[in-house]
Amino acid sequence: MAFGDGAIPRGIDDMKVYVLDASDVPGSAIDVPGIRALNFNVESDSDTLEGDNTTIAIARDAKRVTGSVELGKLEFDALGAFTGNSATTSGTSPNQILTLEESAQAPSQYVQIVGQAPDRGFSGGGYRVTIYKALVTSGPDESMTVNEWSTPTLDFEASENASGNLLKRESYETYTQIT
Image (cartoon, rainbow, N blue to C red):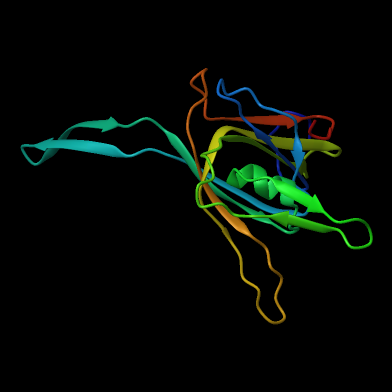
């Protein structure tokens, strides 16, 4: 199979989140270690005009992206970026405490999400998705249950960036880490 014949991504093995400033410029990369899933759907509502027992016209609303992220590790800096909160460290080693408080008044914080998978169709390649402007709308949802892993899930909605784009898909001939 030659490069460009179509990506065959499998799994997800790297993800970064970037807090956006007021001008939608991404800040520094925040690693999301142990990422389990990045799910996203491009969707649009539509309205149908009917008459004489036929469809006269269909109008489509602007597209948007909805999705979710599932974390395998509770990395507080990444979780804070998604939720508009900040992690703090107190104490000294070996008695340090890392704290992330969930504020009821946390500001709406837009983030850029970049997820990547190896390309199984082209040896050494990669497939990357950038969601330009996402806002967490629900979560993190967690469950602490006997004999089960706690893997927080966050739901998001994404809107267009200043250029009018929702997301970008890229196929790399040579896999490179997200910077």
